[in-house]
Length: 338
Image 1 (cartoon, rainbow, N blue to C red):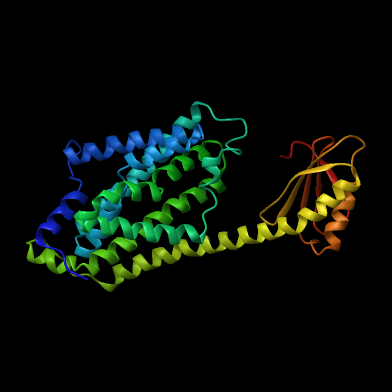
Image 2: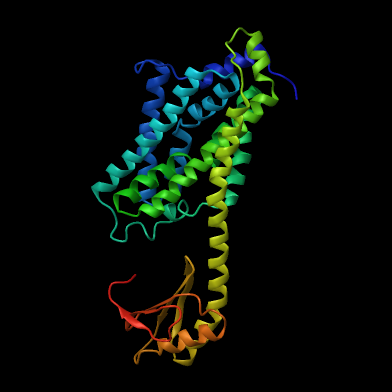
């Protein structure tokens, strides 16, 4: 792969450098745009508006310090590396705080349970890491190649940075801590992918040698730093793999349970609204006229088809909710379970 020209090095360094003084032009631009992007993203999530969330992705400047981390890793510039990392962390916490504050003004009674923007960001899977690696590569490539820099807005849309942080803030405010952790994992996945691919692309373009020729300070690049980047990818890949396997298990469980539940409901003159599985537990929603259906029979039918190890929750539109634990043929009424 061809190396960069000295003028390209200057362009890359200048575009990824946010000056230290708070009132500097680059610093005020970063923080103003970040705050506005945080407000837009949070408003878009609350309103469940995809178009508004996309607008926040385009405005958000977080890609700059993240790629700055990659650049300063390659150049082994410790001071600028620390500053870029601090901007990423500080920017992320700022957006989370914005989401928390806006959420405290008023949140839906279902605590975003039916919000598609939230649901899309609380179940990260391994495919999200693969997509982030590809998108990060495009972003880094567009950075070093000025002739394709017009692809950067598309990169901003493809890789989600600010919206997951807004979701984290909103979910923390309503006490959905486990789901907030998953949204934070999605953000961390994207950051790790951008840093890793940015580092790889800059090394492939021989940034170190050209930067040294252009008069920039280039430190010693230790294998330890590169190992840390690889370790970060592994660190996010492990929970993503676990999440992927969990999603596949739940999909398989729901697929197996659906025809059994449908037959059970038909025999009673009822209908099945939904059959889903969450964290290895089957959730059946059924509706129909009195008298109530025999919920224990559904438990027995599922057991007979090899699903004895799964808890079952049956939501009756007429008759309330029943919980049928694994290992038992008895079901009990549960008040307030949704």
